[in-house]
Image (cartoon, rainbow, N blue to C red; front, side):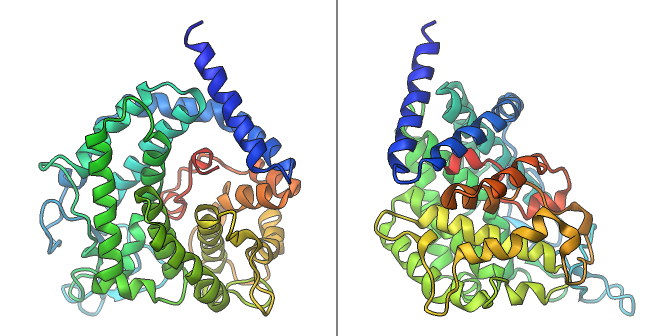
Length: 394
């Protein structure tokens, strides 16, 4: 009985906070409650799994092709393959076609880390049970604090290309899977079980990484790419800066969303022309819209609500969701060429549907989200779905 009372109080307080926060739009709190009810069983099952997992960091595996050291994250660019005319020479590009022989063990370890923390933070948010926090701390310490197992806070050796690059700015997109790690820390940071030294170490790691993302050559290059890479750069920095309480950085990202990302990437009809021009136009359109809506979810404040922002020529995140939604509800309506790979694996329960449904009180968006796959198993889908635990973002 003693355990039930604080949990009930936590739930009541959470619902009251939701109702107060969304006072002007009563549908918001109801949809959040529906999402909680829908996902609760899945969350607790995944958290049971996470409670049994020991930490695995980048130091557990390595590649002879990496120019970095034991603590450096390494991955290889997905769309690069051996040249049939010169098998031992530099790899060549085949856009949209993933090479299954490339080194991705560090990426898999990071995705696993993200799944563990996302599940534990979600379960903690639902139940208030600090056993989930105690388990999460073991993983935070392994990745960010323990000198034997930590990952260096940079991505100098990500998405390398054999014979061409030891690392590329495009590899920065790999750390979108640290977003739910940062958000999980934010959700759990006030728990009694979260000791101050570990929390300080986690925040220092992310602050160092935010600094690298903003000052290094690859970081600056990635920030200024014209397509989804720039959106994902901003989305990551927003998630990490919010954990660190870096208000100046968050303000600069709000400005960037309104003056660069939205106006330069969205077409007049709400589509993303730079994504639809690719060999996977459907998947990339979904991916970029997920990233932009997540940016709005992270950055919106009472005085600067990006959900309501519209450019002088009428572009808005609401227009972007309204454009893509019919093709999510019925993929057969898609008028462009199908994706060259993974066409059959999209859509899944895309976060833009849930976040958008709550913000704009669109019950049809919510219903579509609720019926889609909430536990995708295809690696490529998981790689392009950084928000898999939406409850910790609401």
